[in-house]
Image (cartoon, rainbow, N blue to C red; front, side):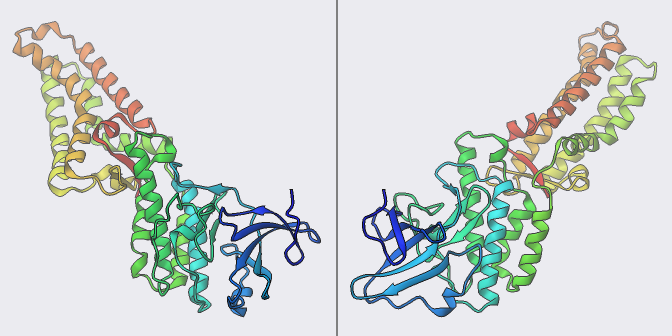
Length: 375
């Protein structure tokens, strides 16, 4: 039910905040919802420069009054379905639009020479359809990160772009927290590495035009890689040893010699993979070619231990299949292992490797605590 006493030309529908400083109003003439802020009786009028701001990232001021009886300012209420960070996932598919809008708003502040409002993460409102809104002050009921107590994460107003960096870091922490709690859906995957590096480097970037251009490039890229990319990665990864193993399987050689030759090829390849992971801590040829990175639960580059574990798990099935004739030799039963059985086991191991890697998150990544993300 509307409040009995209107404010200016607006009918009051009820409180927007628990303290009553913000009210929900209705402009009956234009049939549009309004947010009305009750100001202190001796508050200065809204500056002319602020009245002129009409951007998606800010509330649009409509009118206001300063009287001894009541001082208020009315803003056009945005049409937004609020997103709250109270345990909700923050996938890159959604976050990129929030951050793109945040970059546009902060860039406009810099280019226009405006004095931005208090750059406070508690004053950031996010919408479920990608909207970003920077309020004049923190409003706990609306802020994406404002819980029972305000976080107090305030950014230097002289560096508006730092708000984007802080917002990106906060969203990524929310994702890492969910992964630690056991959430493993696609919405909980770490962000692409290029996105993480971009937002971490914003503090050293002083040109708003270049930031906006890079943000547009990020928005134009696919947010995640599809099934074909993952299958291509495993085929590229095993391409060199498989290109030798498969022709070798067609030759009529004893299982023992096949096992020795194939094992030598495979062990050399695995050794180079482990050397790359353990000593160089670098990506192998396949990851470089497919423009992928391996990251940990925090979205940072995976450490040596995880890289080694991942490589060992990935190559264990094929290594086990090739070791059967060697085990038979050790037991003195070389003739008991038909070559066709070895061939079948090798093909089965290859098929399992392709199948595992075609999953959104492969078995080796699950066991190593890693994720594959775009470079």
